[in-house]
Image 1 (cartoon, rainbow, N blue to C red):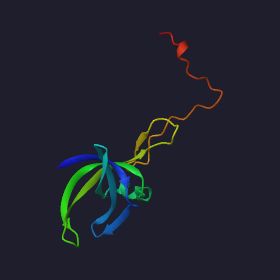
Image 2: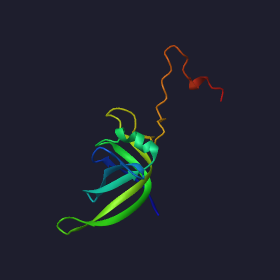
Image 3: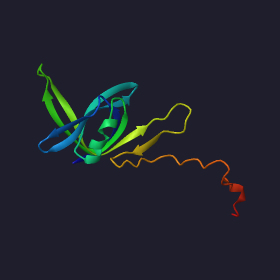
Image 4: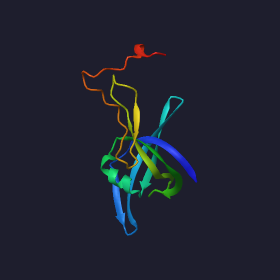
Length: 140
């Protein structure tokens, strides 16, 4: 079994596929690799039958940057011209959205969205008028 963590952008909106063995989500993810000043894109198929991923499918849209953790496998297929290609696939254990932020804001942050809708959020600012922490008042 090959466990992997992979970051990439979703190539087209996620599909929910229903069959007699249940439902699952499927999406294609573009993974960019930069070596010696050149960029190479590898396409990876991501699948999951987890209920929480199925619920998140409406947010798994084209262009979103995600991190996928799961089991990697590969297969070989032939196109209509007889050329052989390798298809990489990941059966996802977790899917996380990567938030790149906007120019001029704080550092990039990743929040876990493996189906628990409890995304980590930045701590809210206290209301105005409340005393603020003052490190100068500490006795040590």
